[in-house]
Image (cartoon, rainbow, N blue to C red; front, side):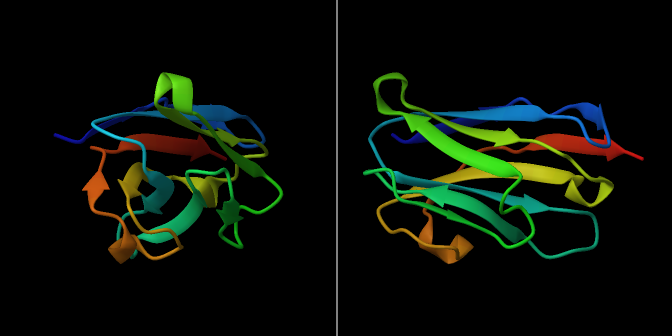
Length: 118
């Protein structure tokens, strides 16, 4: 059974940093982060393949860094230079396919709230 547990979201000031974590059990997958702000559609943030290929959404490129530690079955999202528009629920995702569409991922974490105050 595949399970994803994401964590690390909290309230932070503009310009601050946070690191999100996602622990996966039940296999090694391609993984990604998506976010959804109130009243908005889910947005692709970043993804990393099993072999470490990384892709980023345009709004976070240069500020966020995705990584993974396969020995710990954990994926990370280091978020720097945070802006109020980064406020959202961030969810990790995993699956056999890889890309920037949420439809590619079969398994999802419960989500963690990131709030950036101005």
